[in-house]
Length: 467
Image (cartoon, rainbow, N blue to C red):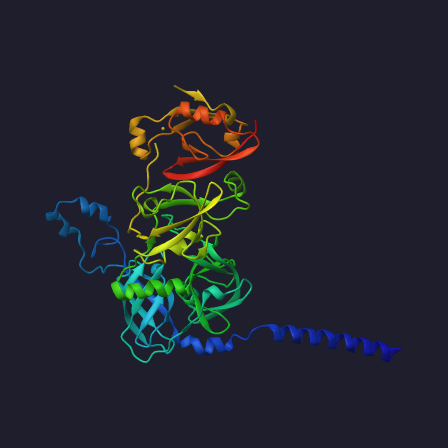
């Protein structure tokens, strides 16, 4: 009996051991990736002079000095006090044997001096060849030869769940290695000015301050992205990090090297996602595409015959599943290129040829301003736009919402006082009288797309007509 129990126990231990060995065999070995590529990863130190007046004693407010007449300023300057400096750290990687380096724009933004440190502890002063805020990419150059370089992979071939590896200097801890998986692809993360030209790779790799600009490798040891952002409430990694696809970075780097700046394609449209209600209101089988909510006058899209309410489903041979896909694709198209675009209009596909324009350095934003009549079925009280408001909004007609009745379709659709309605379905709203006539003729039991202007932005909402 004891022998039987002992045999059973040994069998159980062997089973667990074999299971552990099998699981270990399934885990990737990152050592080769690290050994082959660490030499091409660099640490970047950026130095920026602190704002203020050089030579000013620390107990003197610089604003006081600025308000003094020039003749008295020298009396308050202390020549022995050096100007303070701020230092920040980041990472980067070598892409050519003669010293070109890729990193993030925010790593070197505003820097007065940039220093690069290699794995063998050599240090070089770096020149910023060019830097692009919209993509968060910067190209540096150091004076050196025969340097190790990384190999490039294809970020489009990444699969969600695939292992990836990062090398960088988090919190100044040089050449730290972290690993994780690809959590998602094509993430849209608009910047402060609503620029949205990077389809980010989301991972759960531990990325912290100092990792910015460092490489993200696939299991073949190829760079597939540049670590750029983290989502955090504590200042450290919580498993949400975002990398710029290497194809986007190379495109930007090539332009920075050639001309020092980046040009992007531009259509001159405002877009939004298509949700289930909007899809139904436009006669689509499922939510998909980019809904055109605004057209820049004389812009490329308007010249090509695009209309407000069109839904873009394909551009330049690439499908548009979500609205964020469109700027990602258009931004990489060279201005002046003739491209094919498919839209859904009145439930039917329409193919258009469009000459892609060039995105300006700074985009202008439209400014929104405001015989009373009841919207009746929608629960909206509206007023005509006066001539000044029409001029400011650059519209030929429309009504401004003055009151939203609680519990009515307008409120449920999210309309707010101050919204300017310019179109219902495919019909333009000229004034309050036209608004009343259009609303009276809407069929019950359907969703109707309503175009409005809010805080300088044009968009559509779907309102369900209940009776």
